[in-house]
Image (cartoon, rainbow, N blue to C red; front, side):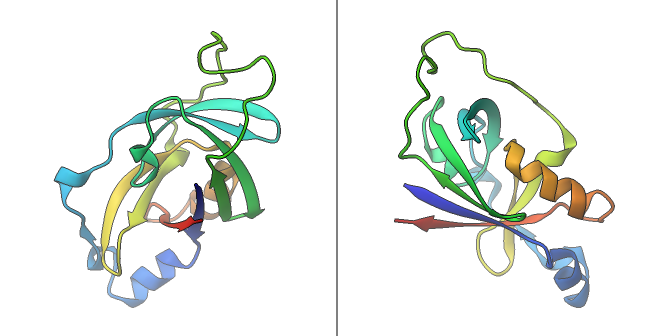
Length: 148
């Protein structure tokens, strides 16, 4: 399965035009996604990261996703990928970890008005986050589309 993740760069401006960041509602908290530990293959290197994000948290722990950067704020995550030779979740490999950093918090947009706070520790996404959102009043808005 493939997912297209897009960081909406116009989000702060859109929110301001619609009356501020309070125009969105928090989605039903009972549906908050589970925290998962997944592996991400990015430029030939496997990283282990914690996530808490709708759709991606539906996969069991230790799932491998291949990361493809389309542009600085658009990414494809593909679950149909192979582990590099000699590396696997079961092999005892200790992936590079960066937990609990401030450049991983997003607002996942379910529909036109409802969001869920999400946490995605994907290295490829950090550059966009730092460049666009270090001095912004809100966390970035994230949309996810399933690609078959």
